[in-house]
Each structure stands twice: as C-alpha cells, then as structure tokens.
Image (cartoon, rainbow, N blue to C red):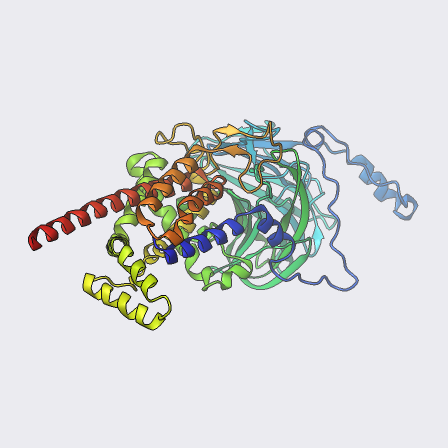
Length: 594
C-alpha cells in the first residue's frame, strides 16, 4: 500500500467513522434532515390522549354518559344512554406467526406480538416483540365523514370465546359492530389467515357510499432494539404503486399529502406496519410525528420520533376493503407482495440522497448484497461462512487490478533505494530529479500512475453496503456462526470483555467492550504494512494504521469486521505470494546475466 492509497483509505475510514458515530446521529436527528413543514396558523398538533393500559383494556368497564351539561341534553336521550351499560372486551387471535389483540373500544388493534421474534434486552427480554407500543391507542382506527370512531364501542358478534386460534391453511373473519346515531350499523370485519403477517379489514354500512372514509394507525410502531447510544430512526414510506417515497421528521410536526396512492406505512429498524388500499386511490395521506421516550441499555432515556399515519378517500360503495402488513422486514417476504414493500429496507433520506445520486443506486446495491448473502446462506447454512464467501467473491472480482497494483508497488519498493539516491543527489534540481526517476521507472518497466488505491475504492461500495445490510437486515438478527463461536449476533458489535465495570460510559471512540476480531485485523494490517511500506517517510503508517483500524472497527457489526478481517488475511497472502514470485524472477534474471 503506497502513500496515496493510505491517505485515501484514512479519508474513507474517517468518513465512515463519522457517519456511524453517536455525534453524527445526534447531528442528523437534531440539526439536519428534511426541512420542517410549518403548521397551519391557528392550529396545533393535538396532544395524544392518555391511553389505557393493557390491564385496563382487559378489565370489564362500564360506559356511562358524561355528567357535564346534562341539562342541555334531552332527558329521553340521557335515559337511553344510561341504559347502555356496555362491557368492553379484548378478542385475541393467534396464528402461526403472530398474536393479535382487538379491543371492542373502537375495534382497534391494540397488540401484535411476533411469535418468531423476542426482545433480546431490557425489562421485556425474552418476551415476544410487540409491534404496538405499550399504553398506546393501537391501530386500525376508522373515521366516517370526519367523525372519528376510535373510542366508540364495536361489539364483537362472534362466539363467546375471547381467544381464537387459527391453524395453518385456515382463515377466519371477526365481525365488530357499532350503531351510529342515524341508525346505520357500521361493521369492521377483520380477516386473519393461519400464516403470514397480513390482516384484512373491511368497513361496511348501509350509507357509506360517497362518504370520506379514513383508516388510521395512531400508535406508530414499537422499536424492538434499544442497545444503541442513539435510538433507531423510524421512517414513513408511501407508494403510488410504481415508486416509493420516504419521509422522516426531526421534531413533532404534521404533513398532509394528496394524490393517487396505494399504501402508506412506517418502519422501525426490523419491522414494518402499513395500510394498504384494495386499489390505487385518490387519497389524502396524513403523517403526524410525535415524540416518544424509551430506555436504552445503559438506562439512559432515549427520545425519538414516532408517526401516526392515515389513509383517507371517498367510498365508492357501502363496503371499503383494506389490509395491513404487520411483520418483519424480510427481503423475500416483502418482495412476494409485488407492491415494492422491499423499498422500505434501505432508503436514502435527507441530504445524503444527493451524494452521487445515492438514492438511485445504493438501495439497489444493498438489496443485491442482501440477496447474495441469503443465496450463499441457503447453500452453506451459516452466515459467517456466507460472509467469507462474499469476501472471496469481491477479491476475485478485483483480482486483476489488485494483482497489477500489488506488483507495481512491490517493484517500486525494490527500486526505492535507487529513487532515494536520486532524490538525494538532485535535491536542488527538481526537474533533473524527476527526469532521472522516470528513467528508472522506464528501465524497470514500472508504471508510476498505476492506481494503487483503485481496488480499495472498488471494495468500498461492498463494504458500505454490507455495513448497512448487517445493521438493518432482520435475517441476521441473532445470527451466530461457528467461524467465530464466541459471537452470537453478527449484526451487533462483538463483545468479548465488557469495560463498563471500569468505564461505565466506555472509552471515547473505542467503546464499552474489548473485541477480538478487530485485534486480529489490526495485527494483519501491521504485517501487511510492514511488507509494503519501505519508504522511511511513511514508516509511521506501519504503526498508526493498525491502531486506527482497531479503534474504528471495535464498534462495527461483528459480521462486517469478519468480512474485513478475512479480506485483510487474503490481501496479506496475496502480497506474500507476489513478493515471493518477484524475488524468484529477480534471482532468475540475475542468474541469466551471469
């Protein structure tokens, strides 16, 4: 690695280090991002009502009319309402993949637990991940002609059982009914299948045609991962059927969008909830950001923005059909719907999308990297081995240029004493010095313009794509490997020895734990630099680069460090092979001259 390559590499690593630092995350969330949309004059974002706890929802309640201004209400109406003492229940539905709770208050979905995914930290460690935040209003709220029915009682008209199990290949409809003041009976009919993450919902009535029907998800989405120093950024996505737009907010605000749309959804790090219309509709989309607080791994309170979303359009008939996807962001699963759900996996938002038009090519590159990783995993059944195979493939692709560059650097290292002698002899005559050095290069058949850093630049897109994939792909959540058996989650930084007992806040830049793989990689980097750097002016790099790499990679996902460590090992072997081959060639040439 020559001086230019080292400088290029250091600059790239500094950029990566900055964009993955807590300081940048704070900067991005609090300072940059999309420009705030001003709220309408005279209007303010309504404060979220204090939601009921799960215990309150499950407890039988009596609904009684308000005593305020009772005198202004006709007596016969008050008497009639007092007769309506209603018991509010929650109906639970269990399928192969999830457990959903539907409250008779509003007919709202108040819980969606993922049977295949557990919390891995915090007070709820070991429990099923629930996509709906605790003590929230839930989702699947409806409004008719501007009137919200989220707090109305929708009586379940099914069997007396409150726990329903649906086996694989079976289907079940659950009907909830509410009688409006005009006598119209509004029905919310939820459809569940025995497997999958799709929940259907039909809204029907005798007078719905021509009315504005709104479908909302007011709770936002729960964030299942809280180990980072900064909370994961939730993102809103919406689609017209052919393209997908992405939106994030840095503070609570409201945005209204009008046009022809098919769906709108919100994602956490690993999960996705969206509202899907039965067809592309002329709709009003409403996105309202609100602040939430969660406790991080260290007990520190983390603030983030969650989103209420709604999809409003005019009913063509007396029955309107929608459905919700409420599940993990799995590449193949999302692609199977053919609605471009997979575009929610690796969105490029904010000012970063203008970086070489990154929003056009980077999502594709990240999707391809994940697809390739999954293909290799299906062959070898181990993500660690799959990552090593990707390393081999990237080395094979860049081999011709790497080989040429390595040979050139090796030859330049051999003639370095001659070059140093010329520089010393003609130090006061730069023109003559350059002429003599170029003559040496021609004599030895060396191209000084050989791009030594080009192979590194070719690997960087793969490196960055892997960095994002390993952090965002739920397929790697909790995935271990026999290659490094002490690591049980390749999507997180390796932690061999914790430092929190000595340094509660961790060592600045280095982190809160000691990892072994970065140490191995630093050692490999040292020996590789030792073989390639012979210029006395660059010898400091021999010692600086390993330390720099050790600090930088200590907080990277273990899978990414495995990739770079394997790449460093292959590079060292390649360098050793070329060095040996060059020495043999020089020896043979010398023997022939004699």
